[in-house]
Length: 252
Image (cartoon, rainbow, N blue to C red; front, side, top):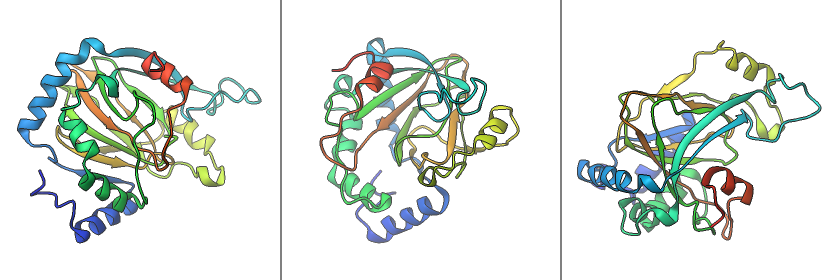
């Protein structure tokens, strides 16, 4: 909806950047028109048989365990993430997701808001545009992102669950302050996280490197469908082979 969101407007870009810098998250509500959401739901349902489903155990830091620390230490304590995923080469080239992802106007807007000089697609054929499926009981466990930002579009909301929860600035990775005690308390249920209200058609920009976050288990029969639009700040970057095998089950 380019009438609601004037991506080319410098004033609008500055306003969005200020919101993202102040809160670590920016939601553009109803970016997608109802007709586009309908198209994307049909597209996702048609292609779901191609999805690679995986259930992974990982620590909150998305790093190999630190063998110098006990298995029960918050650095090594595991949580579960499970989802289905179709990859960039399985998303139709004419999909509204691909059109939006590649639009110069949209990328220029993202650069302005994120404070980046340029954004580039992944140099592998799997990672740039993904569609995620979360059926009943599937979730994303607590974690910090390795990337500086994440861009997502909610396509279909489940009947229950599927809530995006986060705690802002829960570590300081730049100064190697990992907040192990805080993560221990989080995993013991001692914190009340913020909940981001997201509806189908909403675009979310989220800085998750230092803000811990999760998506609660889907409840009910309606699958949660989400698209991830992934860019790099340097050209020629591929997702690591280990990550591709973990999340996609293949390298190309």
